Length: 293
Image 1 (cartoon, helix red, strand yellow):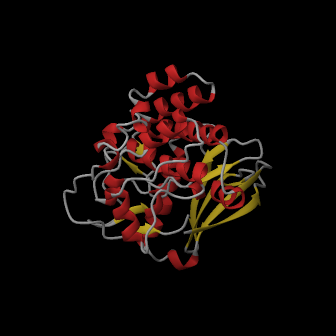
Image 2 (spheres, helix red, strand yellow; image 1 turned 135 degrees about the vertical axis):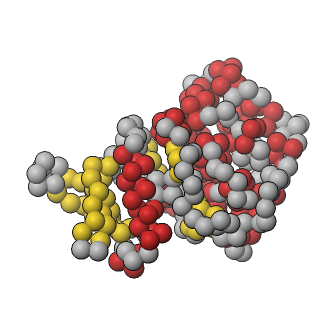
């Protein structure tokens, strides 16, 4: 939707990132509204794990967003290069991202498009969440027409795929898909089309993570991928607490943050929490807007 340029702020003397809405989208009210929404939503948030927005403007038929320049690269690039990440590194990414999302959720803001391409990793392995372009405040109407699905099918929560309202638990599910991909080298669901992938998110059971991974790590990831949002970690802050506790070897604290977590990697792990399709109030998903990674 936008091109990002490195620029120099001549007034304040700082280096910034300037995101410019691509020319082919400037005449489309929908894309322009998404671009404006990204500026408004990100400006609401103040957290070390979220890229800051400094300014927004529209000039001569073009829209631009002036943002914090984040050194580093998208997590998608790191996964493509390294294939598989260690459990400790994956849990660190989950914890950092979850804490940033918790700040957004506390403002009533759901990201709705959490994916590796929207997580920037700095050279010192800090996470910066970006692209709140399709985020939505809980009390606002959707940015799309009825029946249209916003998000990326590979990381779409089941309730989003069936047209239900996205919540903080939807972002947790998407982060679970990212963690699964980091640990296994592949996404839990695939298909020949975006619709097929979205339907798999709703109906299919994710393949088990490798047995070589520690059980608490597998359990936490699978709890994030529960079909029913109520079966996932209660909120992003609790998820971060659990991830940090597992990194520290404190499984009791992890279970306190996410009660019943270990049940997702035991004899009962194939129960309804993992496999029951999310009831759809309407028809099957009609379209996943984003197709990239």
